[in-house]
Length: 216
Ligand code: ADP
Ligand code: AMP
Image 1 (cartoon, rainbow, N blue to C red):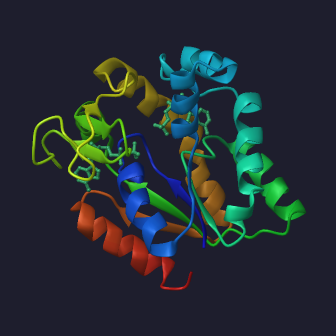
Image 2 (cartoon, helix red, strand yellow):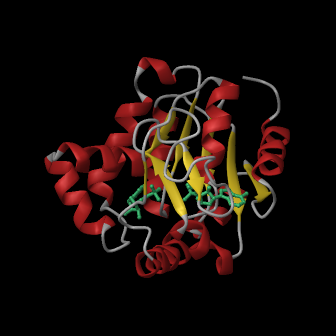
């Protein structure tokens, strides 16, 4: 199964990704996670990416597209993969398409999680992530059993540096300007599945599995 997860910041992509990669046994490729790992490790890429991420802007394509195509070329992606947060604009989508064509890979589905703009800020600002395993919680909508502690691995929960009200609002605007056009782009390719993201986490997952089918 070769999938792209599309949707605005706070739509629930990371939350749904966990269940999808487990069900279909495919690697989860999140460009945001790759950048955050590089920032943590203090790499050159991390330093450059941080300048943009802190402002809620997209990291330039030349720092991003090669990362993804290198990752897709690895052996563990032969039977499928899930891209989360990539592509983020039409030029990244075109770059990906031309790479996929050259390498004879066909995308199965683009899962587009739709959530009204009015609730995205609240979702992102209340997001808490486990430092150890990356599991995602929300202080109100999906709280951990114990405050600040991961239910899955007992790791410490943290708030992303870019999950402030100001930066999230900027990221939503960037989504509307640069990423949302991809909905039309993939609709015209006939591979989009629009999913109502304003339902319980479990119901959203059910709808995604219905759209993807049981095939691996
Ligand atoms: P994205 O990866 O699209 O930015 P996340 O999966 O990190 O979004 O979700 C953003 C926040 O919203 C998290 O705190 C998460 O727990 C919460 N969340 C995700 N899905 C739902 C949902 N269906 N209903 C309510 N809150 C949700
Ligand atoms: P995310 O973890 O998907 O919410 O992404 C966090 C931030 O990482 C974004 O606000 C961007 O600054 C950067 N980022 C992630 N993916 C991309 C991408 N495909 N292109 C450009 N910037 C990205």
